[in-house]
Length: 138
Image (cartoon, rainbow, N blue to C red; front, side, top):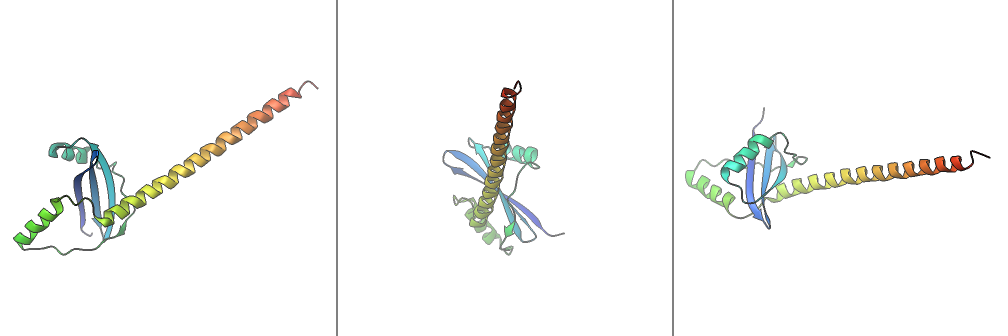
């Protein structure tokens, strides 16, 4: 079984605080975006992860760039500082989230089209029923 990593980045995207989960598994990256609202405390973020871990909806996987692990402690410190700076989410994560949004959009379009057609069919049947009721006595 390969290495699976999960990274959570919390940042401010006006007017809400947003968290981006990035899951890397077997060289594939998938992401999920969660809106927190007010600035979450560390304990609130931890509680959210514990309670909603199963419900987090990740995007389809895209190819991820494998990064080498640094063993130098100063390099690790610089990388941690770079990750915590206000950069926002990475481009791969943005692509994965965008893919998820497009899929959701297609699903909504299909559902609304089916509902429209069902309503149209129902109205047609009702009109046919009224039409037959008018000619019933003749």
